[in-house]
Length: 246
Image 1 (spheres, rainbow, N blue to C red):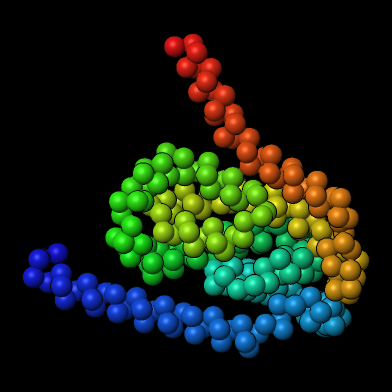
Image 2 (spheres, one colour):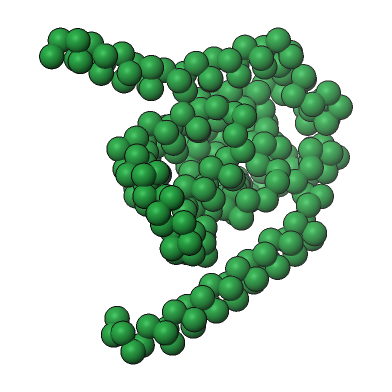
């Protein structure tokens, strides 16, 4: 870019990003205000018969709609992804819901990363370039391990991971396949929970306790935590062994 154009082009680019951010926030607010009832378990529970009837009439349309809605909700960071996971799993069963939810969640996460990267990355990297230099270098080396661990630990909200990773130099394809693998264990648990439900009304009345007890949920959380820490612990042990050998 010629030097005489940069003072003009950069403000224009910033203005475009500000306009895009404003439009996106307005769109998300409008969608949530208009359709937030559709992301509630109660809404689906009241329409169990109608949902089954729709599936019998349009069986080919259900997987497509489920994928698009799920990817859209996660991509725009709207609340309700957990409820959708349970509903789609109950609706389609374990094996039909698994590829839809798994790939739709990764597609939505990647979309959220792209939006975050386009809107915020340049500003953050320019504003905090010196402070982020060491972090970016570490992420180049440990990025897949770091992201994989974050995906496994259910304590960190996924939409935060998507937005933060968009501010880093992680490659898009690396983000995709690591997220696909890292989210799979948690996805399997929730899909199993949804497909095991006798009815949506039981879920609306009892919540996740309709499938899992509090003790089971604690055990699952601890299992994911240790699974997330394991890659780093194994790498640390290998480095220690190599260091002693050398």
